[in-house]
Length: 135
Image 1 (tube, rainbow, N blue to C red):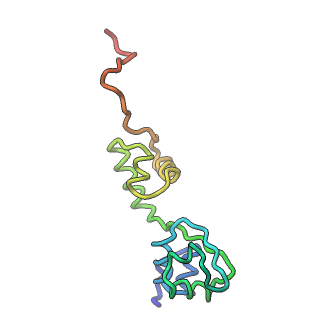
Image 2 (image 1 turned 180 degrees about the vertical axis):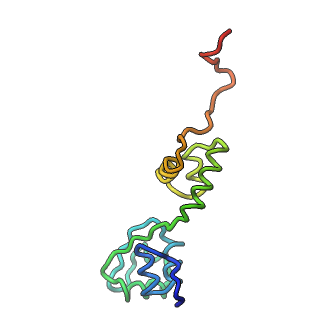
Image 3 (image 1 turned 120 degrees about the vertical axis):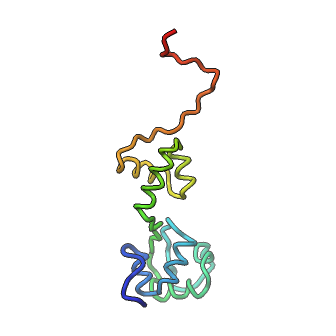
């Protein structure tokens, strides 16, 4: 293992230390955002079935009987930049969340952190009259 850890904090950092970066990457790819119970022996656990058997065996050996939270490990700065850009293009928080693969709540948090209103493009029918224009 290298001196520099890929995962800096949380349960994925522990998984990297005890099982290897390949196991942590596999968890992130298959089960991001999930609280995962690791049984003491291999079973037909539907969550473990999403991982290869060697990955599951490494997890069981190190964390059997415990729980691991597989965080999304989002790169915060890049998400801020993406959210800001997409919001500037008029997308709604829901559309932004779908496009960049984070929760809508996370989009609202990022918008608040960068000081932007969560508004977005307005879907107004062209036939609707403007109530506040002077004729």
